[in-house]
Length: 169
Image 1 (cartoon, one colour):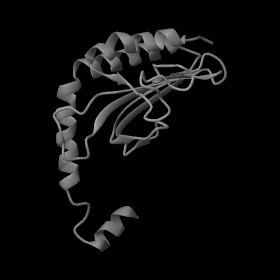
Image 2 (image 1 turned 90 degrees about the vertical axis):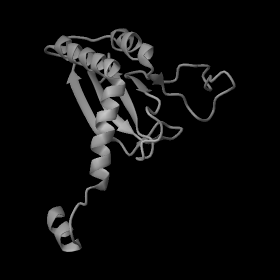
Image 3 (image 1 turned 60 degrees about the horizontal axis):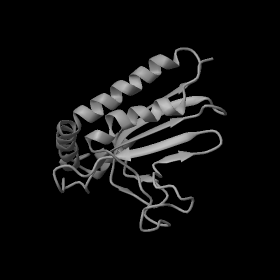
Image 4 (image 1 turned 120 degrees about the vertical axis):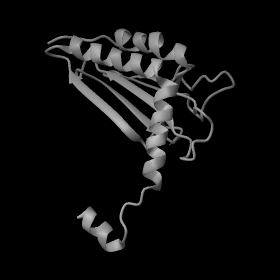
């Protein structure tokens, strides 16, 4: 059994993502003018429970309207020092988020989950490399991905209804 601490997981976000323009998710309701939530927390991208911590960070729309609904890059990280004793992260694109932070229209999702045993440090190194890549190549990667998404959006799934049914079956 090996343990990964919350401060390690989220300090890397502060080091790599925040300086490169990623923003912590803010709630859209139940906040005062200073963006404090009902508990007085003005950094609500970090949710802490009695067993798990969870963070959600995203980029502003790059390059204006992409013609695909304004996709943004998002990254979630979670860690459970107790309870499930797992650590994980997810990198994805999304269109909208509602007040309870549900993600709608997520595509290009990459998700990893590790249990706090074995070589959790190897998993942590993979997480840090993902953060570094996301931070250093955010605009370049966004442009490449949007080009792929745009091509996919204009590529017909099938030439006819019968062919579509056959592909789906």
